[in-house]
Length: 110
Image (cartoon, rainbow, N blue to C red; front, top):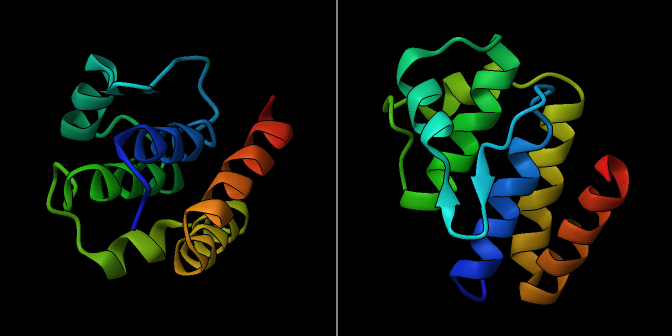
């Protein structure tokens, strides 16, 4: 799926950067304590929460709340759905495409 844990962490970080809060939820080493806390306490909007659960599902194979895939998709709106959809396409095309996807996300959200 991903080349290595470093690339996976970069993908999760890029997904979490779409959550419009001025905090860091993911690092090169994995989720921050705040990401763990928010996944359990759910203080985010539906769309923000869906993005956080996408990152968790990528990171460890499931979200911390055991959110169902359909529920997560229902929670994604417009930009979030586009981000996750484009990520799925990149993953299907290989690690190089995932690198390009990460770069595109960094350009959009500097």
